[in-house]
Length: 132
Image (cartoon, rainbow, N blue to C red; front, side, top):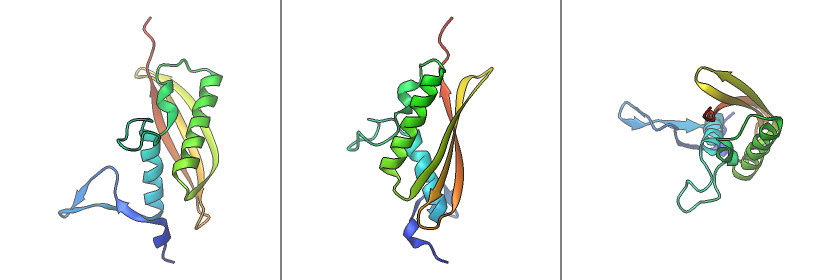
C-alpha cells in the first residue's frame, strides 16, 4: 500500500546521506511534524507567531498537578491545531527528578487518520529548578 497522502519532506533534524538531504516519508513525516510542533515555542517562528506549543510558558513553574494538567492541555491544543493527519488518543505527563533537574516526559498516543495505525511518542520537557 502506498501512502503518498501522508506526505514527504525534508527530515528533521536536517541531515545528509550520500550528498543528499535526508527525507522523511509517511508516518515518519507525521512523527517529525509532532516533534517540531512540540519543540517550537509560540512566537518563535517568523511570519507564524501562533505556530508551536504553549508548554514553554511553564519552564519555570513548579511541578504541581495543575501545571501537569495545563501542559497536557497545551500539547493537545497544539496538535489539534497544527497536525490534522492525527487523532490524539491520550496524553500523559510524567514528572521525573534527578541530578540533571526536573523533567517531564510527555507521552502522546496518537492514531494516523488515513491508515488507522497507532503510535506513541515520548517528548522530554525540561523544567528549570528554582534557586534555593
